[in-house]
Length: 93
Image (cartoon, rainbow, N blue to C red; front, top):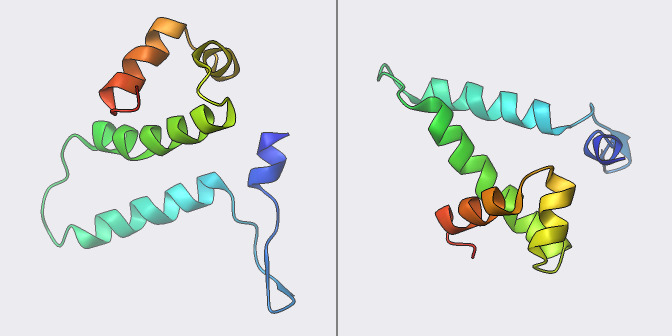
């Protein structure tokens, strides 16, 4: 169900645009990131990516679950302790 929502087509001025999904947005963002490096070397890219994506991801999930960590952990497929640790890391506790 979530996947279908992420792949939902959007329209502008009555015209259909190509599907925009999370994977497409990530790909475009990463391509732009590498273009903006302007010859500089990328480093700790995996950590940077996780920090950029995880915080808003957890914010939305916690809003959806109205702050219920047990429910959030269940729908995320994470242990409650792990989720609490991640929330603390991003100042969302």
